[in-house]
Image 1 (cartoon, rainbow, N blue to C red):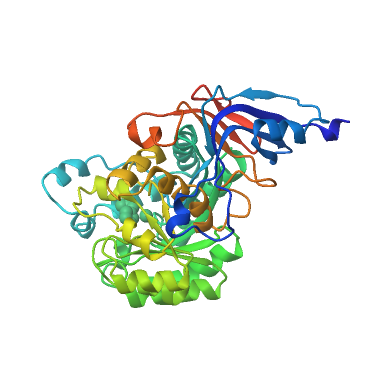
Image 2: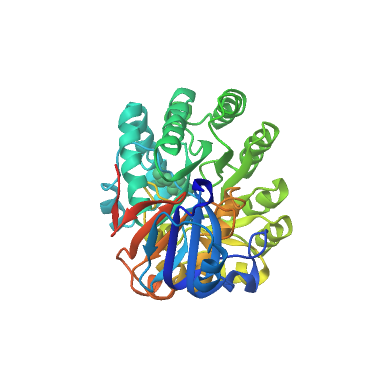
Length: 428
Ligand code: IZC
Ligand code: ZN
């Protein structure tokens, strides 16, 4: 009766957060409904959830089956694997030299305008070998996993010419195939205007539209297309051209919108039906209304506003109250957010965005899954979904954002396999 066995039974769970619920992204009060079960258990078979709920009920359901392996959660907190829906995972180099500029008060966009910022990472990425990029990104992905992430989105955008954009996307694809964490790829050729096109942004936009987008599509290297719509980077009109072309090529759409200046990026996200719009610190009420009407998910990035030393933050509270679905992400990148830790983002989500711990977890599980088109397989602990879960060294949800700056992850189960145990990776 080999095929009637449970592969792994996670039991003796003190607080089990299931996130079970509706199929759509959570909005309003539903963001606080996290589906808590006390004295829970999760039975896993073939990498998927076979039964989940109160331990007594789960044991009754699997009473006739053999259990190959048991994992005692020791009365602690168990929740779905975290999902990081916005990262610039694959890149060369680092930018710690920008810290002293930042301390002198030089703004992020000023550093970029002087040929630093993104453009310095472009130089480092272009000169790096594919293997070096892979090893560096793998290290970051290991960190993300150690901090509880089991699915991660990764953008290109540090090549800014076809061969180097493809190089970044191939690295993301290989990581998806070889690393326990699932990697979902986004093409972001419109991340900045490269130095060799300075003052000729229209020509660069043409290159993205006519050369890069079709080739990335042809090679099947990305599911989504993203644009940095920002003052001095790409205008609303240029962003509209690129995203419309991406839509025609069959990409899902994302946009870095209204991060620093209110440009109308949120309205554009609504107009084009983007799956998500990111940052949104300067988004207007009209912009948020356009997003709400079109069901665009707001991906808020509080580690970025923290690290840029901004005094204002995305209006997540207002977004939730008006019915815009909110997700949270690290924005992991070497400039504005050099951190892999979604647990730090939990704290910043509470303290700087005014979200509750329940809303924060919703924003980095089921809503984050929706933001990358994966809500049918991950983001909640429900029968038939991938068995991706985290055992925290904590006894309730509020403890995670409350006790900040340290890692609370004890165990991570990915596709039914224990990949982190005792806070360490089980394999390399
Ligand atoms: O490398 O600075 N905001 N893109 C848009 C970034 C930050 C990444 C970077
Ligand atoms: Zn970003």
